Picture 1 (cartoon, rainbow, N blue to C red):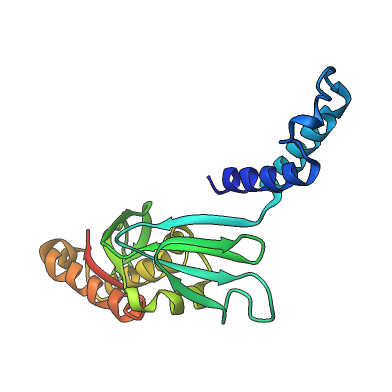
Picture 2: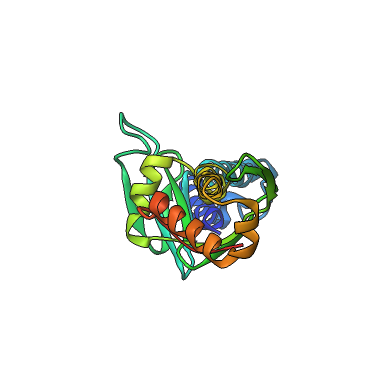
Length: 206
């Protein structure tokens, strides 16, 4: 979309410079000047190149999401140079990048993992949970984790969740886990939120 706009603008400007919109460029009244078509071709090529290399991009931040614009230049690139953005955002893709984070509740399932219960017994779990991002701390989260949503889910957040499950499981025997399942799950959620509450809220875990 934005590339088409720049192509049209560039074509109009270059067309005026090369005179491609003047009838006299192609005809002297009695004869058609085929050789002067190079002006039109050159104008088209230059406009196309401008549209292809122009660094200006446009992106829309959807409802229920928080957007941040991150600087890719300078000594603090990606760390100190972040700002919140909303709606339609114009930015220079050579020096900036837009990250979009959902702030409504998300659900995620992790692959099976081994845990060790109280008494040294091993068990296999497959964590499944709901979480949401604290909207006011998105910039802080990015400055510390330096990744987008998917990378965060499979990296830092996953480690925190699995670590919480392991630590809580160490306090329960296998029988206690099955006989007091709700208590066990509530303890995991509580432990998770201790670790991630600065940026996330875990509301349910199965």
